[in-house]
Image (cartoon, rainbow, N blue to C red):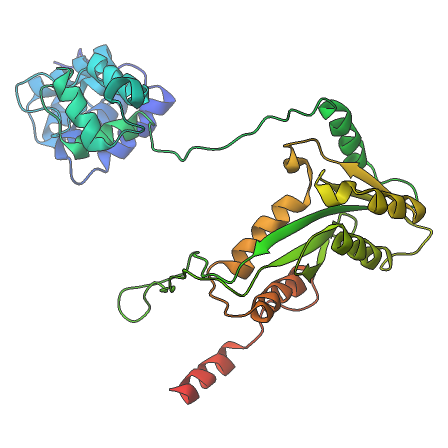
Length: 361
């Protein structure tokens, strides 16, 4: 009776069996896992049968199945297996389902993307499975590590001088030039007066998700935030303008130049936007100890200020519903003041905030 014993366990099998042993909603899996672990621990088959409340013959059957097929031979799920019947979805069927889910929906159903009900209907129409529930299909795809993902955009640079500009920027980022200052320059905007969605904490009851108004007419114009990022001090600064022509950009450069000593050369990374290439701008920059490093076309990701604009948009503008440009600029300035380590995070203490709320109520 005790001649049947479990084979040595692989590390991943032991972890899986320990998880199965703790399954409260699946008593069959928990019992089978206990049988295998007890057998591996040296218990006799008769002792195992007594401890898990089954017959010694069933203990030997479970051990034989595990030795032959591994965990898949002893796992039982009510979704796809019933008593005394073979599995409804074998390994081959599961593989076909995964292949269909990863195939092009345009070629198979003439639509741009799959949904679980449409994938289920297609599998049944093609006789890949006789029937399957949407929930079990979701769990099957999850076990195959197939999940819905948002598509991403990537634009290849068509600049013929891409590698020359790329290597120049790499050298600049790798080592600071002698008697120089590295700056990343770009425009953030246009900044419209419109509700911007974001994220907020909420709970059932009074603290509900914020509601933002809908806007159709925006007649108060836009603003542009001309910004530069100092790589040496990790600070972000900028100016607000109503337009962003070469005249405003030249005024912005004069403002930046005045912030640093005249003997210190400014190495500026910026894109090839029209106002940046203006002859008046480049002539003035050359005469005032400023050197431009232009990013390749369609390669703005090489400008390090871009990632800081993402945080600026998230923490200063999302969610928000500013009614004036002055209010919007104050929100951006408040974030930049904290980001540049010129104030603490807290603007109002918690006790003072609660006191103000009580007085307002």
